Image 1 (cartoon, one colour):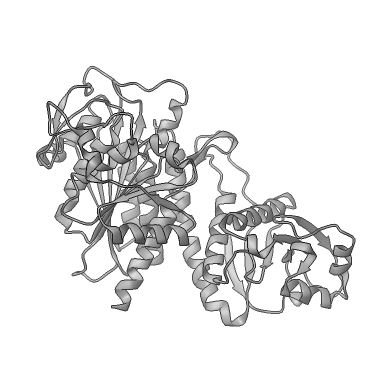
Image 2: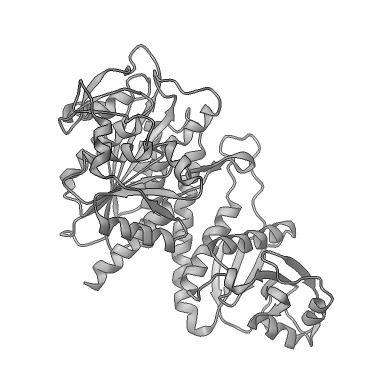
Length: 499
């Protein structure tokens, strides 16, 4: 699909479909008023008949309106202004593109007068609209014998006031980059584990580096990790024939002397639970246990496309957790890269084992900040459901920046504590630390475990287990947390530019 910004008279613009908004109680937006004036009251006549009232997401297609160049005019309900939000924005855009699909339209011009969300931030409205449009047209078909039918929709224009074109263009470009990153994350998450192995992730990272001069890639194999003492990460993959990998993706967009910001993704490409075997029901969804890694890959794509003036290092700790005669057993004690020992009480608490060595490894980069992203605990779903990620951090400033970025990017988080009182739940009689803390505060104790490996830098942890994929009819990866990571890095880059 091609996106474009225009600021010409929409009544004279040739397009297959022109979209204008109708607010609650049949109130016309400015663009709808303009069209109604041009077509001599034809739109108001339709409203008076009660065919559309302006309810959120309501659609009514009109054809051959007099004095209007567009072949069709779609009236789109925006609802009550005071009730508009990111959720209603999503509902409106989803309804719009569903209607366009059903009419097999290839060319559309959208004139919603900054009315689709609660604020008048045209940049944000355009960006979220583009992301939602791209998400709506994403179709997974990589492992299907019959490929998805390409969308008929090729050209999407957004009509804005002439004094808003620059901000709108920026929103369109950034929205496209973030949407592309989300699509990459979704595709990696949706691939089956017999294809998307740790080695496959390495190849994808190398292809990313081949595509951008600003990106370099380094792959650490099991021998290299063994030499570094990364026995915790390696222990997770012991039971699998698939070799574990540590993938390092370096994006150099800032000044050489600027410290990098590091994002670390959990890349367990399939999680059986190991010897602590999961129940069979729903285990197929454990191919999504690498969605943290997928979000790192998608984010690195997006920031390279946007050419952000910042240095970022993406690290993916990739392994497959399988039961076998070589697998790590409950009760085993392993030594991490940091030198701390861990008693493995449950081999299904493996995400923290791959991450802790990766978090120690990144100390060598002298990072400004480190954020890890992981489908780490089922407990986070009990706490926050499937709408919100959890953020935990050893830095109030970093936590607040992430929460703010999530709010702006419509990829929201909620902070949970990692106070010292929780650390005693990880006490072990046989090692420095246990890898689980019992049934209480599972998400918090998992983060407390990671915190022991992050004392040398500002760090935050995003637990995305509740938001990384959808269930039911729309089952599949969502592409989160690409939006929040991109927004955080965009905000940070802007701060660096202003210094």
